[in-house]
Length: 258
Image 1: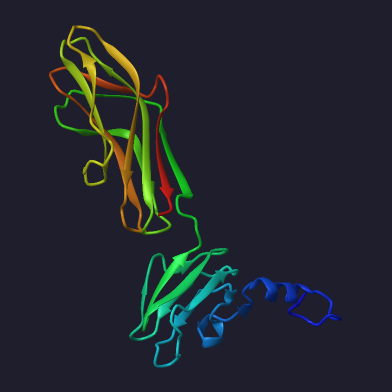
Image 2 (image 1 turned 90 degrees about the vertical axis):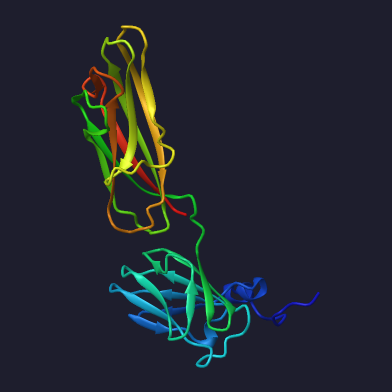
């Protein structure tokens, strides 16, 4: 049997890595680093308490081979930003790495690369909750905000999706044909996808009270703060209510990695 090391040589971790083709590491501790040809197939680790910039040089500077792949891993406290030199395009988002985050740069053409973050698609990145314990009423025939039922979230990534869930107890008065309608909107009163209008009521002169849940799905494409809120209205003369005093009303904004 042939071995990739001398018969008298002790099997070490290094030898084992060579046998299975495990990538070696290039450990960088500065605040800037320009990738080199010798980084191809390796894992470049970045470790600094301050922000770090990793630059992909142009083809004229480094003779990159077709299909070159380079792994990046941030093991420091500073945010790592991946940038291309003049003339170099890097596709993919985000082009930043927080602590303990990594991914792979893949050369797809001359001066064209794609960054693929390590697989956390579908992972919940954060949850923000708001709660309200008051009774809210309206006779408005147009949508108005339910005071206390709004939530603000600052996405960690501009590619994330936001799942918004609102739970509350709705009630109509005893006027026949009076219905409660609710919806989830953004701060500009634009309805959010999936948060269908909910009609709750009775054609008879009977008060109706029930717990309800609305679920919405948004892709704000920003890493700035965004606000979502619950709105309600009546569809005829009469009073409709959100009875959060009977059961705490809640709104959740859940950021999910793309």
